[in-house]
Image 1 (spheres, rainbow, N blue to C red):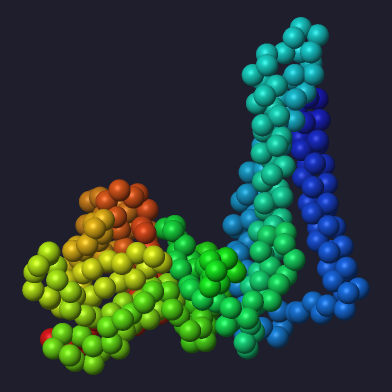
Image 2 (cartoon, rainbow, N blue to C red):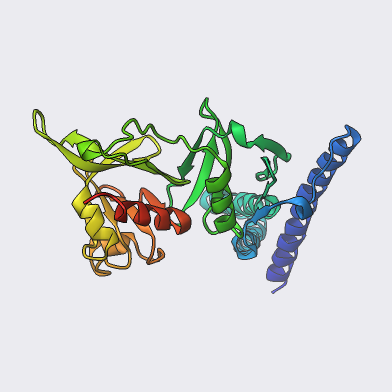
Length: 321
């Protein structure tokens, strides 16, 4: 009994000590910035404030404390068996649990501190334990989606350096999405064809996480050019039949298959059979979103959400017939 009480006490003392250490280091960093004359902005002046939700870092902290409790208990057992010779595997497990719990508490503290403030012409980004830094909007060369089922976006400079990233689950993400769509010049992929089939002027569609154009391309070697929609996501180009994408956004078809390699599928979670492979891949995603899937991947390659999904559907519906 006393071993359990002591191990729990040690775990909580360690959790409090690590949290206090991380907080103190952060405050010392902020004080040094003030001493250098650098102003620490407040959230009050921001047009949009993005923070991780409380449960995201709280769950990790609770799990970390549990790991510390278990690691402390195993450590005491190892000490008790020292005279008889504790099994090496038990020592390794105890050390791993303590290190994992310590890392989890540090991670939770960094997640709690993370924020993005969207100002009039720049972003103030504080990611993890790093100091807050300013990102001018003109520095953002590309906006690419995060490769996870919850969505999100990352901004990169012209030389490929990551300037910021934010998960779709974060509080304020939808507002940041709209802010970026309105203020950032998106050039995530080239759109060389400003004219579609029969030389009709059709401007390309551009969203926060992707872009697209309507143009003529040959679908086979030496074949006659046909009207297609090219979807640009990150460095990938997905070629889709215009009629299939139109049927998808009109609700007459659940999936539009690409005519490019590697094979990809643009799917609507609202229409996909939930018992199928595609249904399992889009499980939990908003019904109004559009999801890019690949056969070899369990999670979606990209998800068009909110403003991206709405404007893309409207753009496709407005294409000449």
